[in-house]
Length: 410
Ligand SMILES: *Cc1c(COP(=O)(O)O)cnc(C)c1O
Image (cartoon, rainbow, N blue to C red; front, side):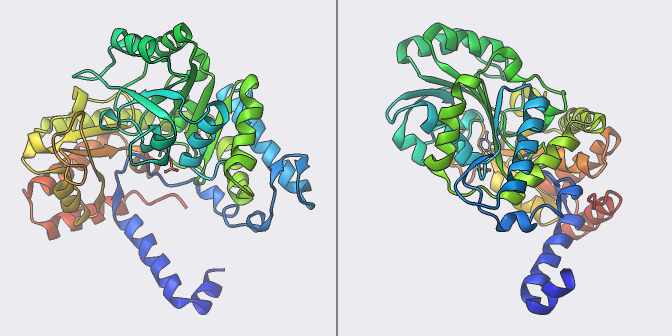
């Protein structure tokens, strides 16, 4: 296959090789990225990608779907078993259409949604003014308190005043646990549907390292499948039975056409691998590594938003710690092969393209086999690059040597 590509399109083949080398020789510290299970490669881009399977298993609009039905039912069954859900929709093309499907399935335009503030860690699809969702639904926001955590009395007051139809918990950049039962109690008081967007931590919940919002009685849980879950790119909606029809119809025909069946097939295998004990050990290691990295960074003078982490990510306030903005920090790290992203901190006074923070995560380096013992060396490389304490060529060599010891699986 590879030699055929190289022959037919040497330009694209060469770019692919450069990207492979970039990933192998550097280290991914972006909290939302990971290296997918290598077992999925034969399924991603397989002949299933050539098949149209609009509709639900056994209720399709095209012929030839015998095996598409088999593979989708396999994925649905595994998703339900792994997360303890009454229903699973495995068709969302990615995380954003997944959340849109929940909104369009369960709400009417103009309805009120109570969700986490973007600068406090919420996601764009949770009603950022620049997202289409922010123009269609009426978003009301809650934030975190200084040092992390939530003021549930204030959130209850907001909920009583605004009467949201949907209450969302979930984040892209919040380093602490969430008390799902407390959110559920507030939603019940005002008759709101509960949704947890666990896109970042879906794999950590599947691996039983973090609590499952469905166990706290949440109505809907959404997760991307390509972050901590190590599956193909995609979205997964889990819900209670009464919401099944509305959500399925919002995915198709509401928002999407044919599902990407190679992605659904790869998800089936990812869910199988995520159900193994080995994956539970991986999920715990992701958390142990994040704690160790946080402590080592603090030892080198880094100030962390909320003072630490309970999950896979941490946010360094690089402006307060080192006197440079997040964009400059990201660029300095990039130049030595450490890949991260700039990040706003709660109520950031700096602009989003030059924010105060830097977000770091341990899922990808843990996939490469790093343990707590490696986190001090990693923290030293990060701080030396951000502060310019060592010359960049020397640091780039050190990162390459370090990365070589932990090859990407597959
Ligand atoms: C990543 C993420 C999404 C969106 O996923 P895409 O696949 O990038 O569209 C939605 N919600 C949260 C909380 C996320 O972290």
